[in-house]
Amino acid sequence: MRKKLSSKEISENLKILDFNWTIENDKLINNYEFKSFESAIEFINLVAKKCDELELKGSVYLSPRGINFSISGTEANIEQYIEFMENDSRFLNIPLKRTYSETQPFRRMKVRLKKEIISLGRDDINPRELTGEYVSPQELLSMYENNEDVVVLDTRNEYETRVGLFENAVDLQLDTFRDFPKAIEQLPEGYKDKQIVMYCTGGIRCEKASAVMLKAGFTDVKQLEGGVLDYFKETGGKYWNGDCFVFDERVALDTDLNETEYIYCYICREPLSAEEKASPDFKINEYCPYCIKRD
Image 1: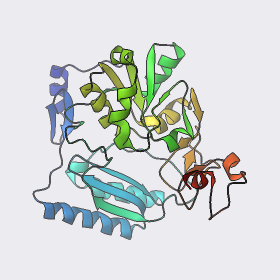
Image 2: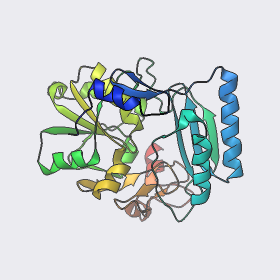
Image 3: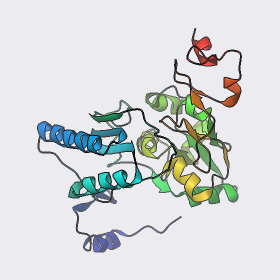
Image 4: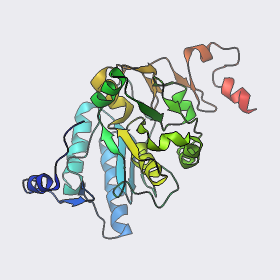
């Protein structure tokens, strides 16, 4: 594990930062605030206008507890967007993840205010107040290499885990993320005192999921920093089986972060593998094996 800074070391380092960082519950926090609902709407409208000017597609979500954007465009235009965001000191040094695509992975641009960026339906869960300790991709790789006694827990939905997951990972078979609190009630009681490392695509869901588990009495809950995509980037994806579902028109990426053969069913939006596309139960733009199951 990486060495944690003491409270004194954190305080000393804060003195050299130019931004509005504070310490809350041993975490570094940089708040963004809007004086009114109208000012938040004004900000969202500015973002939408900038995205339109730069011909970007994807999504920007602003909620009371965070901001998230997944956008695509030319590299030059993406850099202009980041510069635009960072001109507002509230958004300096936002953690960014970059991947490259030969085609536009999004069909449209969505800029919205949301109650929750990732819907869980639990008002008592606030990652700023409680969340699991972070484990880096290299640390998780080391756990596998050293055969450590750890429960690797997938917090994603069933249609995602079907595309790929970590070796020996516990798959909760979730229909939606809102099912997570109920699903962990079915885990063996012995897991309460085991070391658990959870993961999701980019890390956002785990910030909430780890808090849910800690509140439910699980004592050693950690989360994979940066999610599966950062793990691929930093480790080459060792101990991952399959591909990784992503929420855009690329559908799934391999461990080299390249687009794969997966496609969406245009009727039910389930991801389809090459084998499923070859099934007699698949006819493009009409039905797929999952459409038939639902009927």
